[in-house]
Structure formats: C-alpha cells, structure tokens
Length: 448
Image (cartoon, rainbow, N blue to C red; front, side, top):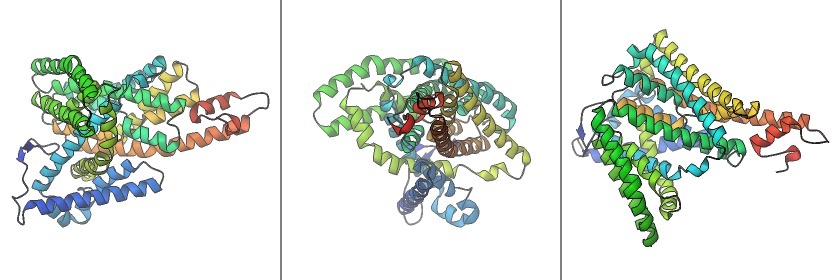
C-alpha cells in the first residue's frame, strides 16, 4: 500500500518492520502519545469554554516542530520517524475518508430554510473572502506557491481557503452556546452547509486544473452521474432489504472507500469521493443513522486526532522565521480572512433583511474555519498548490478564527441579553427584544 506525506511527492510503503525493534512498537507508541496529548488538550479547552476539537488541533501542533521539535527535538525525531509518519498518514487519510462520509450523510438540503437569506449569506460570506483571498494570494504568490502549482490554480485555491467555514465545528459551538435550535443557529448551519457543498465542488475543479483537465473532468462527471443514477437507487433498495445493522454500516463505508479510490485515480483527493458518496446516501435510509451514530465516536475520538497530529508534524511556526515580512504576511492573511468573512456575511444578510445585530452574529459564526480549513490546507499542500509556509499560515488562521468564535459569540449573547433586559417595555417587546429572541430563542423574562 502506498501513501504520501502531506506536502511531499515521494511514495513510501506502509511498513512497520523496517526500523530496529520492529517499527510497529514505535508506531503504536506514537498513536498512544497522540491520542493522550490531543484529548488532554481537548479536555483543557472544554474547561476554558472552547470546543474540544480546538484543543485536539493544538495537541497535534504541540507534537510537531513548532513545540516538541523546539523543546525536545531528540524525542520528536525518535518517536516520529519517517516510517511512523508514513503509517500515521495512512491512518489519518482513512480517518478523513470516514469523516467526510459522515459529513456528506449529515448534509441535508432540507436544512436550508430561508433560501433568500441563506443564499445572501453564502454569496457574501464566500464571495468577498474569495476575491480578497485571491487578490492577496496573487500578491504573496512568490512566497506561498507550491512547486506543483500554476499561478491560476494557486490564486484560486488560496481564495477558496480564505472563504472556508467549518460546518462540524460550528455545529459544536452552537450546541455549547445553546444556539443550535434558535433562528440564528439554524441560519448559520444552513449557510455553512450550502457553503461547504460549494467549497468542495470548487476544490474539485481547482484540483482538476492541476492535472489533465479534460480527462479529469470527464471522469469526475461520470462518477457524479454514476453516484446519482446508479448508486443512489441501489442504496435505496438495499436499505429496504437489509436487516442486519452491521451490513447497513458496512455498505456505505465500503462505498465511500471505493469512491475515494476512484477519485484518487483521476487525480482528485480521496475525501472528495467519500463526501460525494455520503451526499447520495438517501436521507431516509437507516444507513445514515448507522454512519452518523456508530462511526461518530470512534472517528472523532481516535482517527481525527491522527490527522491533527499529521497537520502538526507538517506545521512549523519556525518557517515564519525572524523576518518581519513573514509575520506581516500572516497578520495580513488573518486580517483579510476575518474582516471579509464577517463583513461579507453580515453585510449581505443585512441587505437581505436580517436585523443588524443578528447579521453581525451570523458573520462571527461563519468566521469559524476549524477542521474544514485544515483538510483543505492539507489537500493543497499534498497537491503542491502551496508550500510549507502557506500551509503553516492557513493552519494558524484556522486555529485563531476557531478559538475566537466561541468567546465572541458568548459576548454577543451576553450583550444582547443585557440590552433586551434594559429596554423591555410593559406594553410589548422592544425591537432589541425581538433581535434577542432571534439570537437566543428567548423573549423578555426568559419565556420561550
């Protein structure tokens, strides 16, 4: 079995015996360390009011050259040898495939309620960041472009990376804040879901541009047609005839892995195939419940931390160096990502009729980039679209924007509650109360 490190083009063979003592022992030890560190950091983040996934991402960064590599490089080099990193990469890619299958299964067009408002939020929240990110990418091209990228592909990819919103992490933050069943929460989830679908489609087109465009496009269209016209009806029939819970779980997993192999063979990233398969699984099929419930815990708790570790092992803050130019570039990318996402989303939603306070809250929520940004950045590094510095900057942007979402929204909810309580009137509900009702699902006095 072959794989590649993120950002490398050298094929390596999955091997656990090439190192002294049988590399399996070292690989297993590395997995144990990764899981322990990531979940410890996740627990700490939960205590500090942040989503656990942010701590797990930071745990992966701590094990890489940005932390362990600086403080105790001998341990890092001994534990994470090239063979171990290759094996971790295989496990991480499998985790991503299952994760994207779950994401595809959970993506429902029925989530999109107010189509006009959602469309405006997505148009502004992705359009403005994409254009600004593409422009910034064009300026920073000499510093960030990867060896395998053309100028157009790099600029398009960098714009897309800036425009990303992380649906899974956003959903978790909304639950933690108690906003998941409120109008503003539903609007944010709808916009993020639609934006995710557009982002993966756009990424597919960009990746096709790095290979033989015509052939890749033809095969990709054929795969989509097969998924819709053949796979979906077959899954519908199987869902009605299969009585075994195990088989109902195995069928979509096998299908996702098969589609991942197909997309890999046509020079697209494997996760795109897994996501496509998840999308075509019938929404009323028991397969959806099996995938989202039975695979969720193992994937989130075991497989994704291996991916976070892979990201950390390829992220080196040292690449920013002592040069003020690199740090200014990072600050510029971060500022552009935050400002354009909040202004683009909030401004478009405001023009579509959303009250000003909710429009600002929606922009803050959509600024969360999380795991999706890491996956996209990893794909870009793997495809040679960005170099190590570009990858590091995008990872840091994902961490900062994700970390900021929870605290900013807590402050927004607190401020809205304060204003609503102060301006409540006996003869009715003040305008700010109406806005608060939209934000938290409460009216004056806390009544639902």
